[in-house]
Length: 237
Figure: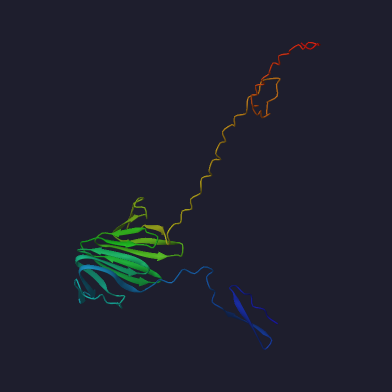
């Protein structure tokens, strides 16, 4: 009987006295979440053109209904006002002059900015990625962080608090949290209130404290009546 040495994870099939090795695909322990490829408009103020392959397919003006189902291959040109698009679980904001397009590739979302106005991509954690004209970033969610890779131009990354700004140039990348950071505040232990010392009754040294209750007696004046004695003669007068 011959044995075949197994290099990768295999399933053994016994047939006609022989051991046959059949490769079985392995599954990563922690696969990255699949990218959400849906694209929808959440806010519009002004006039916006929806384009595909350089051709305007729809113009949204003030008062027009916002289309619910959008082609993932559309680009957005803001003629006036601003627009907010939700794509890949992130918010993309464009202002007057912005021309941007979100696309999906291999579990990542790519956002390109071609207009004169800047484009802002905001992650669920509140981090902001601003793209000037001619910039392109590739954003990949690993489950705990979102990797921001600049493929063209540059990007300005700002944290959720509005500070910690960094400029990421082409060929560079930055990692931002995928979800909001939860800050746990520890409660400061309260101080035990100090008790004021109680005042004790002062007693003269050597003499016990007098606790007897005295009831005042009613003053009584005794009137003594004097009886005058009269001598009586023994003989009759």
